Image (cartoon, rainbow, N blue to C red; front, side, top):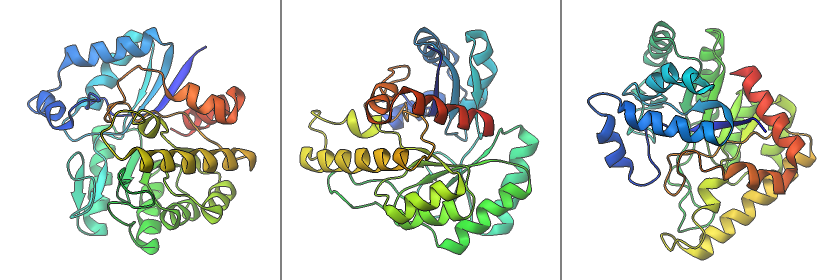
Length: 280
C-alpha cells in the first residue's frame, strides 16, 4: 500500500532536537536526509508534508525526494508571532505587515504552502494543560485570510478547543495536533471541511518510556482517541501525520497508520491523506 505522512519534521531526528538543529545549522546534512528518505521509501511512502524550518533542510529534502519516488511538500520556514511558541524553528513577525512580508518571501523562495503557529504544546505531565494558549480569534482569522489571499493553503499548528474552532471557522486547510478538542471544535472543522492531522504517534510513543507522567500520557491518549473517533463518525477528514522527528518518533517508523487505522479504518485514513494531497 502506498502511504502518505502528512506531518513530518525532516530537520529533527526523534532523539535530541537541539543536536538535530546543530547538525544542519551550517548547511543541510545530505547524508542524514538520504537516510530518512530511504527509510520512508522502504515503508512505501510516496508523499511527505514537512512542518518547515528556517535552515533550508525541508527545501533540500524536497530536491532529493524525487530520487526516492516521493512527492515532498514544505512551507519552508513556519511563521510564528514574536514571543510565542515556534521561534526555535521558524521565522517571527510582530505585526500583520511583517507577516505579509514573510508570505511574500515564502512565495519568492518557492514555498508550497504557509504554516502558522497559533498555540503552544501539550504539557505531557499534566492532562488538559497547554504550554501556551492560542492567539486571539480575530488575529487567527486575519493570518489565514492574508495567506489565502496570496493563493496559499494554510497548515496550522493548533492545540486547544477554542483555537481549533477559530482556525476552522476562518477556513484553515489543516489543523495539526489538535489536543483537547471538544464538540464545538469538531463541528467547526466538519462544517468548514478542515482536515485534521492529529499526530497520534507523539502521544502513543511516549507510553511506557517514563519520560513523562504515565498517568497524564494515558489520559491524553484516551482523550485524543475519543475525539478522533468522534470526528470520523461525523464524516470529518482525518489525515495520517506522525510528527516524525519529534521525541520518540523516528523517521519512517510507520506508527501513525496502525494507530489511525484501528480507530477509524483504512478507508477513512486513505480519504484523509487524499484530502491533504489534493490541497497541498
